[in-house]
Image 1 (cartoon, rainbow, N blue to C red):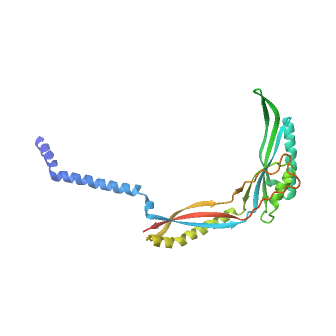
Image 2: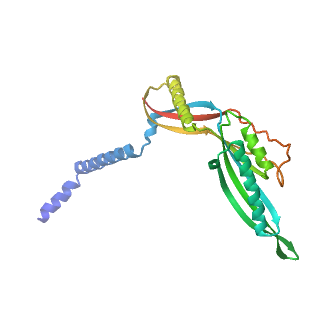
Image 3: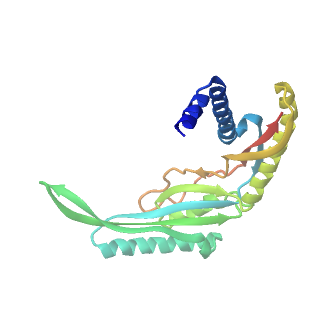
Length: 257
């Protein structure tokens, strides 16, 4: 038995067995590397991205007006709220008279807080302030371009002393975005043939894409309009709507060979 074991050990030490063992290990290593390469190599190396862009112009038909009333240093909290409620009621009445529906007038913020004076390192309540913010949806501004100005002017005359911003929108914004996407895809396809020829590659099927909304309905930051107690009777804001654009960028990922 010992002689057989010794003979086996001697056989394994011969060069041909060592070479065979090395060959098996090398082959195993190649197989493992191939499997890992297929899993971890970036498949996008065989792809190319063609970018298309499209613009769709539109005229906004909705404006969201954010305005408010600020009451400063009323002697009592209830007096601050009373003044605030009185002015807001007048503002809502004036806005509805212009043609804005009550469902399109929403309170966004309502607050009451004390104000303090400091003297000799001692603070004391010097009055009470109150604030209410309204968001007003003004529809049909594409047909009546002066409607936003009228809403702001009448609200200010009724007591609004803050205009915090105006956002323009369009009712069919989703349809417009889809139109822009389709045009951007067409633009990318038109470009693809010339670009592929210049790069010396052949384009195959589209394997993916991305979308980047470069421009969509945006807000207009209005400056402070009116003053304490509202604007004067002759003051009229000039807010222009104009045309706006939705701009979409689409990248098509093609397989190449």
